[in-house]
Length: 249
Image (cartoon, rainbow, N blue to C red; front, side):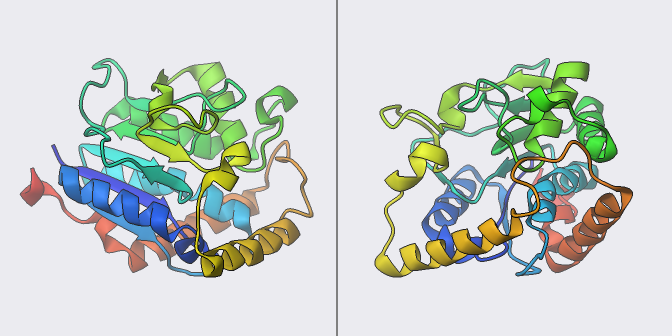
């Protein structure tokens, strides 16, 4: 089975989370799948576009013929003991995510089997960008995760993953993917230089988030147009995402 793992490392994430991305690359190499760290364009003014980008890129990977596509946030470190993500998945499932700290599905790690159901789910989430998302679905969120929660609640489509595949809350868990977000962030040990880079990145992101302290209830058509334009730019810069994969089967 062919596979693609990708992360999005724009706006300084490629250096701030270098060790996490290196672990993802090593994992992809170990299980024999393609790995892409999306670093171009290096600067995206609207950070919400970078956050949403995972959805159309996952869709593009499936449409190009990969049997499986896995997205991992740049601030996630993959254990050297993590098994092949394609193994032991529920055969009736198409899109797989673990619950986050809030008990709702978290889009920091997404696994997609190449099925019509997976492609339809991704399309529904992208299309929902201009829909009104209820407050309870976007509570304490800033970007696309509220839409993922909303579409899964209304239409279904997400099969559960064990917390080991996206551990954002339990430092003692013997996990496969450790997500250094929220209270887990201080556990990521960096060199002094990397820590300074992260602090600069954090200040930049805080300025970007000043317009919306939480995820807006909906976004305009111009946001979707900009997202698709960014998708095309990324696919041109990173052709591996849609590279013909028949020779890898």
